[in-house]
Length: 222
Ligand SMILES: [Zn+2]
View 1 (cartoon, rainbow, N blue to C red):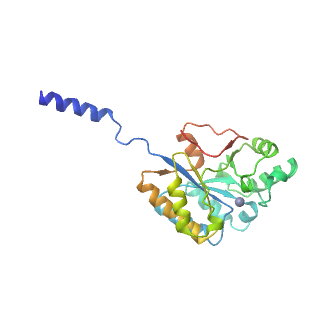
View 2 (view 1 turned 180 degrees about the vertical axis):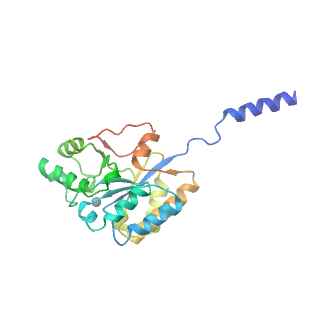
View 3 (view 1 turned 90 degrees about the horizontal axis):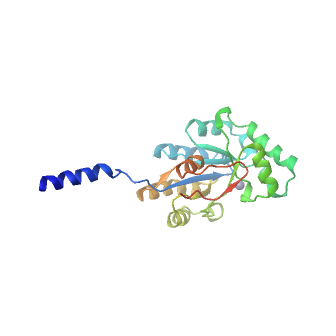
């Protein structure tokens, strides 16, 4: 009987997946690339083998094209954040498509662009139409610790770690040391809780969602 029970438990162990699917979130960084802060963030992410999503501005890409190349080479995802970082909600159709195509032209050929985050996350039917024409989905966020205003890495870290849930899209900016410190601490702490980090497109895939050009997504829950 004991031998039978041992065999029975052995069968159960075989049938249960070793690792249940872990919760996953996407870290996203707006407004870069920054000549002062992006490199240290990329170093920290590389050290931790974490991929993130960067919504880049065209006028900054003009200054730091090598950082975009490094992002792509290291497996990060790049999305558009406009050329000028002006409010897209108040732009006409021609200006919108110019913003998107001018930024796109500055990105590495293999950047594989599928995402747009309008500055401030402000979108309108016209922005959605421009995104659809360009073949990109609009990505806002579900967790916003307001790192650009708080400038305190501990407060930002706590705001994210306390709120994070499976499928969240976390908004940060690689525009200050406190944001970079917070981002890396968030990775370390959420990892201890079993979280996986992936790019926005990977998160969609993982959660079984298809990102449709012109549609808007703030989180990608299962
Ligand atoms: Zn922005």
